[in-house]
Length: 239
Image 1 (cartoon, one colour):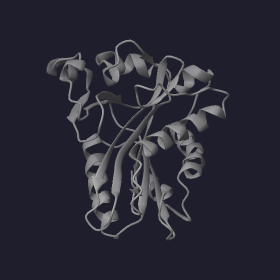
Image 2 (tube, helix red, strand yellow; image 1 turned 90 degrees about the vertical axis):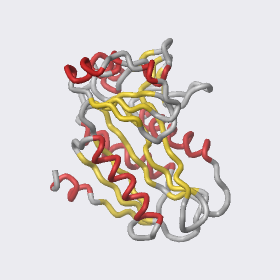
Image 3 (spheres, one colour; image 1 turned 120 degrees about the horizontal axis):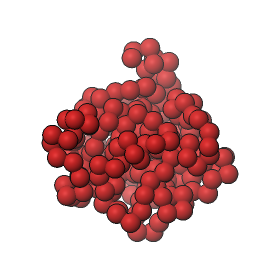
Image 4 (cartoon, helix red, strand yellow; image 1 turned 180 degrees about the vertical axis):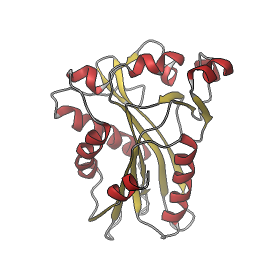
């Protein structure tokens, strides 16, 4: 956040949406935000089982062939965010912050990534969980297992200085998500470490919408906005 003008954030939660629909929604939202047609957004949602391959483009980290993907009911997309391959699926909270950064000429792309990680670290701390980082990787870790993957794109603004962010974080909530989806890939190309979830770390059960609501104040603490427009109820009603 580097503008002196009042900033509003539109916050949405969508219980389930196909990856292709959400990707189109991101691209259209980035265009509209850049054109001044709508506020910046934080979209929180879940996807059906999906693998996405980022710009590092290592298809060998996908361990299933096309027939196996069909049998498992998992979609596959090569997309325009940074990073390697990851999994999205039910029981995971995905967040897409679509924000303007660097308008005043101070562009700290790594700082943006660290702030996203810190949102999850702050939230984990409320349960007494010590989330952390590994210097060579993005994302949030609990010990040697990853609980949240992060991959973003910085879209050059066409109307002003700076960038608009898209894509974001994938926060594992439900127990068993590793066996359900991550077993078919080498997550983020990192073979030596595994993945975990909030439920496995706490021994509690969580509703994804509950986590989304609890996470929002932590996001606003790291990305402060003067005004908040929430279409949470509208997004729920439209599903």
